[in-house]
Image 1 (cartoon, one colour):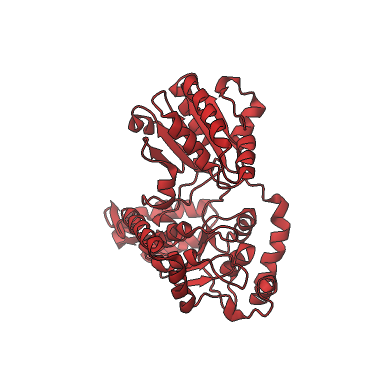
Image 2 (cartoon, one colour):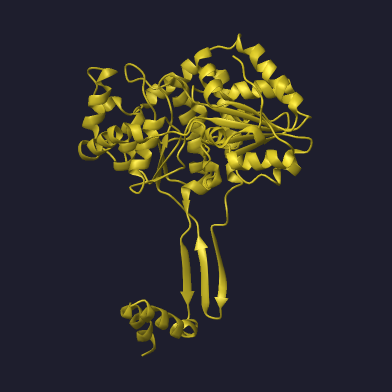
Length: 430
């Protein structure tokens, strides 16, 4: 598989647009099908889910939908002690990082004499965490979704994940959910899981928010139920941009590049460098490594459709391009990554220096891997404690404090044609 370096200056508008839009999920093709499922679950609940999962278990009953304690205990035996140990280490680091995000529970200021205003922090009551499953298991996604919610003080966390044949949950996913302290785990995936959490069924509780990555069917379902519940940012296929100068190690860069696109056929990887020599060497190493790669269909698709090696005229152009791309994962491999960091405006999660490859953030450094994709890093952040709390404001006014604002409020209320608003203030001085 051949990949060729290109100069940023040589990208025509169409080519540049292709790079920027990469593998953004187009959910329009599945939206109507997903809408039917969502509406059906809203009206018929568990009945729809049972009909769907008869393909996994012909004699399925409602009791098959929720994971039992016995299943979790059996999962520990299947997964084994080494994996359990590693999940606990990751959970400890993720918890520690997210605890540092907690803010003061309440603050207030005196706006003027007699007028006190402030804000309090309150956690959501119950949240749902979508955990991808099916052909692959992502126990790390359980930790990333559940632990920030628990740190935030959410009273109840509920996970949904696609089951395997026989309505069996993935053992690693079940163990991770237990380690994270997830309260309930339902073996329901796709739009069925999302809609079940959004509207509630006879067994699944209705939640306040749904977080976690999934395929385009999951994304479409989350977009459809938004407003009924809150959701995190829309998520598409995984992506990474590597920003490097001449000091970058081409062997490591090539490996990081390839590690990013082994996720799925629509993953995206981009190298932006000021060094033409580095770009050429990285391409040569990728070609050399290609023959020994597993799952070539995935790599070939990602390399041919969404991956690029780009040469910038200078670091200023490289950084401008990086900010425009707004990557889910950004690696900075420059002489002084902290100086470069100061110029980065848009990225989901940033990995600095040669010893911070993206997989360390995927699993165990403590930062969250549920991140915005498809340029959504321009307006969204990665999942955090903030996603699970609300910040209502409050005010207390003395009579003198209200008196100081009385004429202002009355005038503005009358200007907006709301006379009872004005009367509500006047009445306190009559």
